[in-house]
Amino acid sequence: MSEPVFIAAGEALTDLIVADAACTQWTARTGGSTWNVARAMARLDVAAAFAGAISRDVFGEALWQASMDSSLDPRFLQRLDKSPLLAIVHQLSPPSYFFVGDDSADLHFDPLALPENWRKHCRWMHFGGISLARRPLADRLIALARDAKEAGIRISYDPNWRLLMDERYDATLQAMTGLADVVKVSDEDLAGLFRSDDIERAFATLRSFNPAAQYLYTKGERGASLHIGDDEWHAPAMAVPVADTVGAGDASIAGYVYSQLCAPQRAPRDHLRFAVAAGAAACIGAGATPPSLADIERLLLETGHA
Image (cartoon, rainbow, N blue to C red; front, side):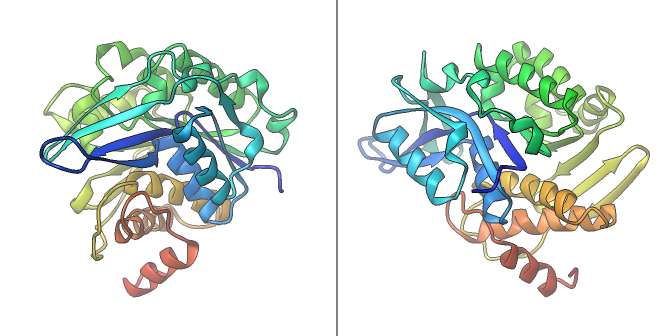
């Protein structure tokens, strides 16, 4: 196995999704935003790893097997005798959920137990999701991001706002934005993170935390934009048959990172289009289905952006 050039650090969890009106039947699905990004990069044939901790029970076993099926480096995934992290999705429309994970395995992830010399090979690390809102894990991840930054590793960050990211998350948002080379954020993220309906003002505030970063700003059906310094580029959403939008944001940041890593000669607009195509391709399959490079390139060709 090749040493990973890309590592996503954070949470892998199980979504328990209600399957009937009486809330007596549930469907379990493997998930977690940072874990999804790692799988998306591996699907693009990048040597990738997910750095995090999972339980040893039936939920952890499913995450382990899915990680191995995705060709993620097993040395970075820690298995512990702790309870699983669960996201209980008890209402689908509109979505309503809560997390169960007191003293769960994810909180005990130990960056010091990562394989020796991982910094030597890694070129990019990704952070985000609820892992950065769960202490003491969040403190360890911020320290890991600083360590990676000092080692010359590029950093991407997707806050991926959830309800538990209230005002206590503000310092983390500012710290991680300050460390990132690329920040991926959606309009829904901005509304939640800044607790405001003034989305453009929220975006301007976020950018003020790190004017030197690149910002991938996704807007659902309105497409996406890329902001670098005083320059910006826009790309419309791509029309595809949508099974659901689960994992689309994770695929879009994976697509953007892949484009930067593997085709650095591309113009910023082309990096943006590749990210939009990756997100759109993820919507074609049900659940968090990472698209292949062929899926993305076919979509770009069909829309005249190859």
